[in-house]
Length: 169
Image (cartoon, rainbow, N blue to C red; front, side, top):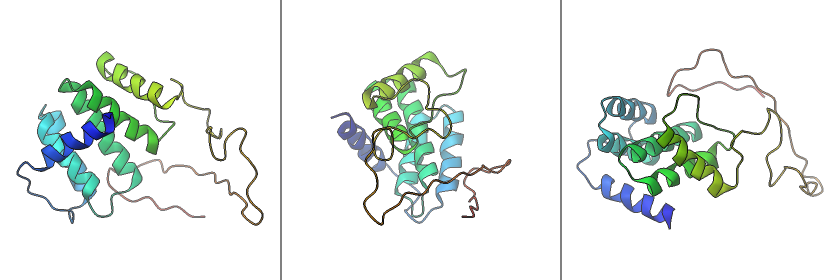
């Protein structure tokens, strides 16, 4: 029900006059949304964030970031159930993400509700720990011929919003 309400709210926002199409760069749209957010223009930020989700080539990180901003905007607008639904979407994409210190109590409460909804702990699993579910504790071995692969990677020291990151395997 909550996800359905979030979708309906987003559809209603998307129907408002918009100057973008699905061909716009998701990174540029995110920057525009962040600018609206910083200016306390939450409805305008939400319009841009919806465009991010619909943009061609949006990465999982960009999608998660857009949902994170959606959750914060919905919290600021007093739309608690929509905020929780947006934070649930963040956690589906990034289960180990947790809010940084200094986040407002209202945002923290909405995020905590999303954690509870998904049955996730308030502190993330230790680095390198396998999450519960497929491939986590109690998982069955892979089917014959289907071995899993563990990857270790380090993030580059400097990252730019909306810029690609090269990964070598």
